Amino acid sequence: MSGSLKITHLNSWHKNHAKMVEFAGYEMPIWYEKGIVEEHLTVRRSVGVFDVTHMGRFIFKGPDAENLLDYLTTNDVKNLKVGEGQYSVLCNEKGGIIDDLIIYRLGDERFFVVVNSANKVKDEEWFRRHAKGRSVEIQNISDITPQFAVQGPKAIETLNKISEVNLNRPYRFGEIIETKLAGYEVYATRTGYTGEDGYEISQLNVPLSNPKPAVDLWERILEAGGEFGITPVGLGARDTLRLEAGMPLHGSDITEETTPLEARLKFVVKLDKKDFIGKQALAEQNERKPSKLRVGLIMIDKGIPRPHLPIFAAGRIIGETTSGSYSPLLPKGYGIALGYVNREYKKDGTIVYIEVHGKKRPAEVVKPRKMLKRIREKASQLT
Image (cartoon, rainbow, N blue to C red):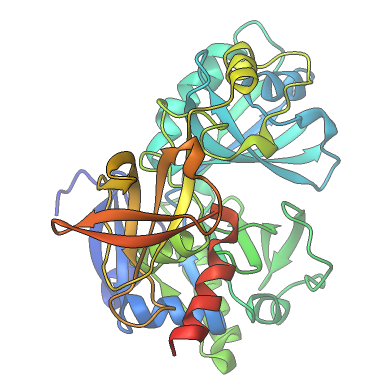
C-alpha cells in the first residue's frame, strides 16, 4: 500500500485487527475479524463503532460566520439554535451538489461543520474563496479531531456508561452536546450514516503526533459495549448499512451533475430564504419539475445490482443505478440499489427491471427514506 496515504489516529490499532484498504486518500479498515455481514447485523441488532476520522471537520467563527454558511448552503442556517444541527448541501451556481454536510451551531457566532472525506480539500477551497472580505475565521480541525460513530439500538446505553452527561434523551437529529466521554472533551452529535440511532463522537484537541488519547477512548467505547457484543465496523459494512437506509454517497448517488431536487433532498432546500449559491437554478428546476428522481430499488428475485446498470420499464431504458450491493437483512442473493429513473416511475411499488449479468431482473421502487422499513418487511416475508 502506498506510503503517501494519510492515516487516522487508530491506524496501528486497525492494522492489528482489520483488513486495510485505500479510501479517499486514507489507509482505512474495510472489515475486522467478524467480517462485513456480521458487523452489519451487529449494528442493526445491538451496537457497532466506526472510525470516521477521515471525514473533514471545520470551525467557522466570527460575526459573518452565520451569513457565510447560510449563503453557501441550501438549508436555513439562521434557524439553527445553539446546540442544534442540520443536514444540508453545498451547491454550485447550476444547482449541482458539491457536497452534502452537517452544520452545528455551537454559539451565536460559532459553528462546527462536518464534510465528506473525499471532498474536504475542495470544500475548504470553496469555503475560503467565498469567505474573502467577510469577518469570519475558518479553522480546519480535521487532523486534531478523531471522530467515532457509535450506532445501533444499544449505542446510547453503551455511551452512557462513560459519559459525563445523560445521553439518553428524546431523539432530535443533529443535537450537539459538549461533554466528556471517559474524561475526554468531545462533541457528541445525534447523527449517523446507518439508519440506526446513535451518536458521532468528535474528540477534541488530539494531534496525530500523539494518538494515545484517541486509542484510549476507542478502547473505552469497546469496553463499555462489551456486554452488548459491540464490534468495530469497517468501510464495507458502513456502505451496506447506509445503502439499506437509502442514504446517498457523494461521488456515486449525488454529484455536481445532480441537484438536491433530483436527489429527493428537497427538504433541505429553502427556496424562500433570501439567497444562496444555486438558488436561481434550483428555483427554475423546481418550477418545471425535475425530469429524473433518485429512488431506492429492492430486488424482487435474487440478483445483486451494482452501479451503472441500466434500469428498464415498458421495454426501454428509464434510468441507471448509482449504488448497489447485497442486503445482509435479506436472504442470501437478494440485492438492493439506489438509482435515478424518469419521473413517472418514482412511485413506491412500481416494478422496473435492472440488467444484472445480462438478464433483466425485477425490482421494486421505494422512496429512499423508506428503504430500511421496506427491506425489513420483505425480510420477514421471505424468512
